[in-house]
Length: 273
Image 1: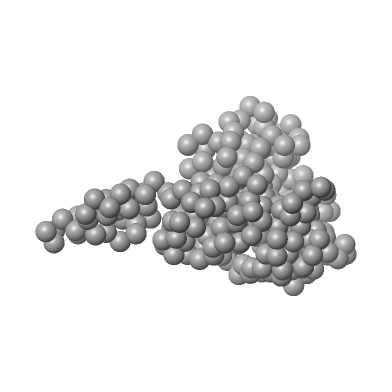
Image 2: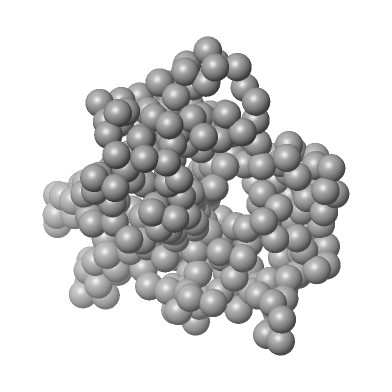
């Protein structure tokens, strides 16, 4: 679905934000891209729907070269982006009108827009708020409306650029639940995040540091590389860190990604003693 081929990008008078990054993301994957501040992860995200164009290398979205301006509209229909601050993405005074904004600008017939808006709001659990004013919603609810606006465009790929960063714990859980449902429906989801516990929920984690890709693999493989993560300014998720501390204290547990898995591993270990 997405290919980056030796992509580099540099902002004016700064070091390279991306430096010779190559990777591929398959249709239907759930991928986390993680990194410390300044690692290049948001710069990479903006290359995925041609908000930024590479200084060197090439980005292909479903075979379309982002550097070709004739492909820009088609690429942005394929790849929807949700950013950190939901207030920056809401443009109307009624929730359902905001969700309809994108399809209307594409000239989609009104009957089809109505269907898409209803389905998108239902997908994020916001159908009861269709007639509400966005400014009256919580941060998590606003972010769900922003996601619905992207879903109404029928994207093949949804990119969440630190979309949970400004949310409280409940809002973060709500968004992550939506992400899981969308992934099960076959949408390719790319999460840009600094929360390693969020990355643990994904099929694959890509780690950036100083504009370079330093790790790429499933969560268990990535979290086993603690030294590389620490050099990249990242920590292990709390559950993984707890398991490591228990092992350092004399236990012998496998790498566990969630509380239930860790509890089961501790139980199995205790039964062997």
